[in-house]
Length: 108
Image 1 (cartoon, one colour):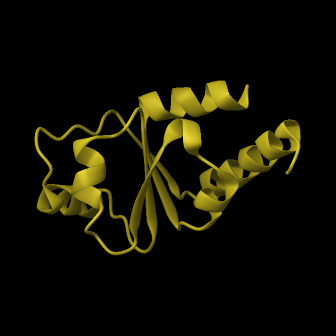
Image 2 (cartoon, helix red, strand yellow):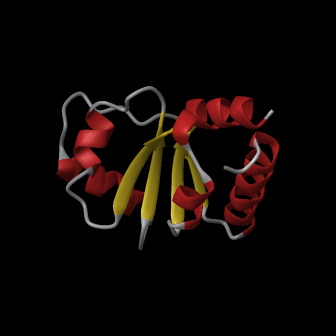
Image 3 (cartoon, rainbow, N blue to C red):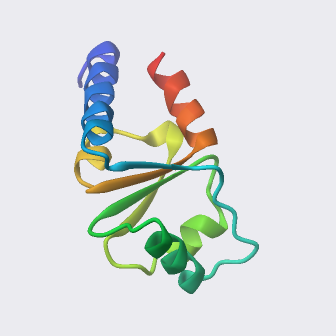
C-alpha cells in the first residue's frame, strides 16, 4: 500500500489537474427531496456536464446517489472516500461546497 502522505499528495495533484482543466464544478448544494433520475439529468445538463462525471457527496448522499445511479457515465462517491483513481477516471467532478471542505480537511 502507498504511504498516506504519498496518497494525499497524489490526490492533491489529481484534483489540481482537474481544476487547471476547468473540469471541477462546485455547486452550493445538491439536495433532492426524493430520488429522481430526471432531476439529476436536468442538474447535469444545466451544469453542461458531458462525458464521465463524478458527483462527490457528503455523508451517504442519499437521494443524490439514488438519482444518479441510473445515469450512464455518472458515478457518485463520498467526499471522505475520494481517491486518485476515481478523480482520474472521470472527465468532470461535481462537488458541493460542503464536499470541498471535507476533502480539504482530508488533504490538510
